[in-house]
Amino acid sequence: MSLFIIFLFSLDTLYLSLDSALSIAERRSVEKMNERYNRTLAREKVLEEFERVLPSPYLNLSYAKRNNHSSRSYGGEIGLSQILFSPELVGGLVSTAPTYQYYQAQSELSRLRLKYLTKTSYYQLLKFQEIYRVKREERIKKELNWQLSEEKYRLQRVSNLERLRSENDFLLAKMEEENAYKNLLLAQENLKAVIGEERELFIFATSELTPPEETTIDFLQFWKELEERHPEWQAVKKGKDLSEIALYSAIFKFLPTISLSLSSYYSDSSSFPKSIRSWQEKDLSHLSLYLSFPILDITGYLLNVSAHRQERKRAEIKLREGRLSLYKEAKDAFLSLNEANTRFRYAQKNFELAKEILRLGEEEKRLGLLSYLDFLDIETKYANAYQIYITSLIDIYQAKAKVDYLIGKK
Image (cartoon, rainbow, N blue to C red; front, side):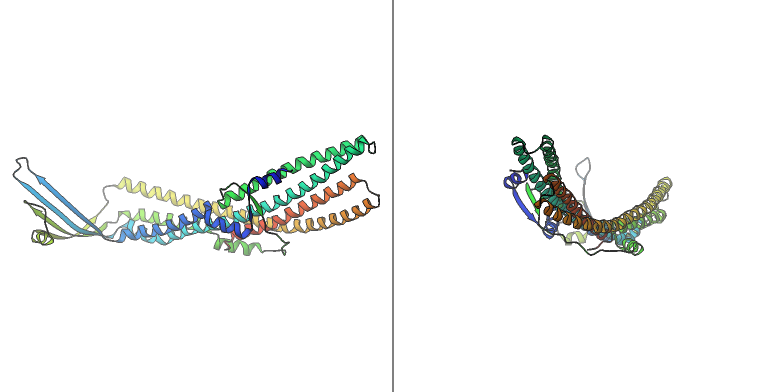
């Protein structure tokens, strides 16, 4: 019994379609947790800025006693403080929209990345699943041929060369099967990691991929759409906007902070107020307007402006670096899709030829015109042609998934 069968019976098997894999990923994956985190963070950042605009209530109570224990004082202050203007407050309000958009873009990036990684890892599982099936069937055939050759050699019906050749073919097929099995298990673990499946399951991919219609895209149109929609690029641009706002906020920090305070002060030598009325009888109300000028911290001001100026330069470098990197990634996706389409056409034609050669080989073998080992060689080439066909088919689906990811297709 093969390792594949042993594994199937030793563990539960999860039969998984692509839609089911995407559904599980939406519930359990780490990328989904990142998406939720960034969406929550976007809302919290907005609320933080608006919270600074709201008035701040305060309540202070004091008690004092002199050394001779005969004089005591009870005091209290309650009021509202409202910042009317400050460079930080204005900068925070102006940055509210780009900050929200930045974290929303990060959230959307996590969602798109999850979909892309789930698709590509599922396609990889499909590929190695088929490759293992082919390699296993090939190994079984060559094992039977080797056993038959051993029996024929014992009966002196085949030469020692043919016996050794059949054993060599079997051993090579066995090693290829073991390698294919390892790749199959790794593809399963990769898919599990992406979708957040932690159970010890054997995953069997059930979706079937049909040869797609050839897709051609105009690169300039593709690049234009990518610049407009790719969330990672949108996040980088918003980061640049935020650095600009932070710099101007630091520059205008020399302006005064203006605040208004409305307070009521209570003072008594006998006790704290026992009711609102007792407070009102002895309170002293104040309406104060404060202007705070940061004129004594010139060094700190200049260092702060310099630091934000450097942050803006870093954001500009990151923006240019990100654009060049994204352009390279877009070009790679574009060329990969074109190559996948071309390679699939050749692989499909090669597979059709291999099927025809196999059919002719079966006829010649039936007529006794072809040795069994030569026929096995034809079968091996047929299996290799099928493997190339499946790989090229998967490459198309993966290349399309990459294009959809880059343009932010939902």
